[in-house]
Image (cartoon, rainbow, N blue to C red):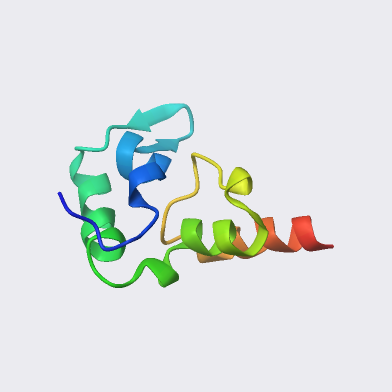
Length: 83
């Protein structure tokens, strides 16, 4: 699977899936694959909440439970770091 996002090679979500509570969704699950098709494999990486947090405050602040569509959570993380 070839990604357009320049961070996909080192993105935990892209390579290892995501967390919902304590449950891990595998990277090959249909949910994760759907997010990959929407954000990672097309030129929409700059709309990805994970990408936005990483670029604004550093990738170390991107949690495993942050999904690409969680823009409100991304803004909360950024605001907490920058205040």
